[in-house]
Image 1 (tube, one colour):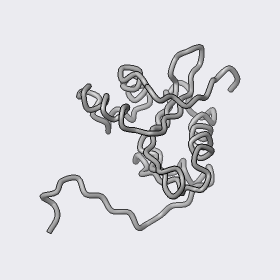
Image 2 (cartoon, one colour):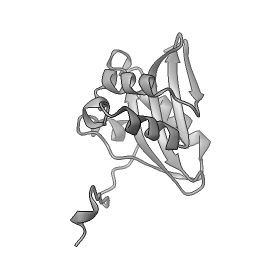
Image 3 (cartoon, helix red, strand yellow):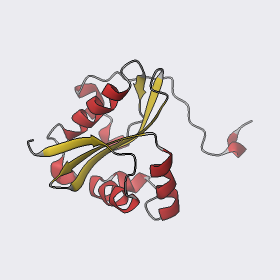
Image 4 (cartoon, one colour):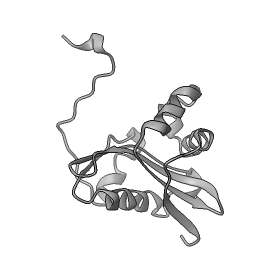
Amino acid sequence: MTGIVYAIESNLNSSEFIDVLNRSTLGERRPVDDFSRIKKMCENANLIVTARLDGKLIGVARSITDFVYCTYLSDLAVDVAYQKKEIGKRLIEETKKQAPQAKLILLSAPAAIDYYPKIGMKKHNHCFILDDISELK
């Protein structure tokens, strides 16, 4: 899709981020009703790649990385109106370009689980999650 500008943004506006999360359906699994938490998510991510069309945020890849070993792509969100136009793939490419040596890692949203293998990502079965310290035994 032409006219889309991809950029690294160090100061992503939290309201814009919430808006694109909701327009992508990723908002269903993110704390979009907790503005201060979203604000911290934007402030503490050290790699944010955006896709804008005429200035409007239509996609974002928000990551945490050390730039040499691992990049955790926490949020990949593309406005539903712009999905299936390779914007998500391009956001992943632009993220990977910033840390070419680092392994790019993400946890898929349930609805997107079939998307990632189609663009060449490999499934990994050795992932573990801890939501609350009280769950440790």
